[in-house]
Image (cartoon, helix red, strand yellow):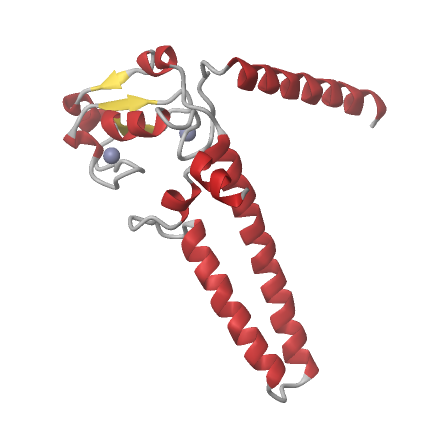
Length: 179
Ligand SMILES: [Zn+2]
Ligand SMILES: [Zn+2]
């Protein structure tokens, strides 16, 4: 059922929230809809084949990209929250230190200056305001910038992740032997 999928994964508030970030899935979907409308108008007019073909190629490339974005978004949003113990282990930096190590850098979540408040550093080295990052990690376990994951308390999810890593390792071994 679509409704419960969206409820479970908070898709609506991220994709269509009022605070949409530039290039969010919601905005991209809007852009694609405009492209489609333009395309159908073009088909209805007496444009030559070449320009229709060119528009089709562009449109298909854009739709493929959009589909990829939705897959990534759905994947990220289906991740469980990070384990409290994993959040507690993240190094904390105070404003004085931030002014030295990351002067003028901004928090990717709220886009305000990092040195305004205490920050947390993810294992990938991405920095966020402690408050901004904790709000996110209490819902999903991956870095908002690069999707590097923190561990979770979700045993089923952890088992699935281990199985996926095992399969990837087996495939890498196979590829190195036979390719
Ligand atoms: Zn922030
Ligand atoms: Zn990161």
